[in-house]
Image 1 (cartoon, rainbow, N blue to C red):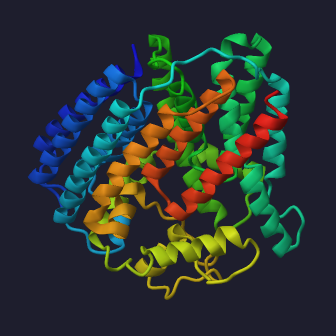
Image 2 (image 1 turned 90 degrees about the vertical axis):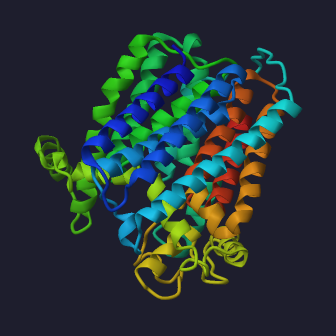
Length: 465
């Protein structure tokens, strides 16, 4: 079975379940008949995209469909089941707002597809050549990641200004998350060339990363590794296929990821008020696994649905574009880039990143300021749909077309000196597209993209030899 077919089956199953669930549950404060029609249209759109993707092998389109299925179509289902949303509590959100957001997303997808289609038909994919000048030493590559992870610890110098400058340098040139991604790409495309012990060592390092990152309070470590593996696999020259046992393994991973999310949420809540020892962390794990609170509508299952409800973020920003107008404008973005990326350790305009500034608006904290950003810290997701509409209004439709066209054209025109280099470049581009869809701000994305490129250059020069 290939990945495209699997997504098509899931999409069709979600559509049937949505219609069935609405027949049982009926309307609520966020869902009415028009919402269900919108959800059905989204499912049909996804299906047509996947049909085209299967013929042309377009990983960018696969990622778009993946996100739409699990974070937008599934969100319509979960809102039908449990009308609960933390994001919708910021300002007043009506079912009409949800419907408008949903139909705007469908329209935007058409423009993204049009851009991808035009780039695909006007630019041919360069014939793939198997070249292996860069093989790389497996243990050297793993050592590079371990060093990046250890070096990534905060407050290494103990002096605030110097630590902020050092953190900037680490994030830009030695980002442990990006290094992990590159290591996963290497592992994925050299799997058959690695010895049994090397494979085991790689897997042990990946599991160790998930465990340590989760214990530090991250709720998405397992998902990050899974998505990195997906991007690395899609970067191959052929359609992504897998065996039934791989599908069963993936199904087994779902409850594990959910339990990790629940535990990390409990740990965050617990550590917010006190320092947590290793023994206390183990107790939190025990309580999280044994508790039945996550089965309740307003318990952890509601939080899980809310956390993967990217439709909520887009809808809220689109509906309240005016309230955020002082943030979503080009001058603010330029000032944010200067303050947060071009002058590390110094402040010029006192502008937090866009993602960190929204909290000042919906909680009425006053004017966004870097002086209070730690006190009021929140990194809000915007989504590409919400951010583009807030920035450009209906002119965003052109931005969606250009996004699809430029990403696909770049993907088709990538140059390389070795097979591994090609796969890394492809996977990094797919990851940038994924980050843009989820968007925590174009200012943040700019920094991340530069960091990916510089870390890759460092990796290629000193490790991948």
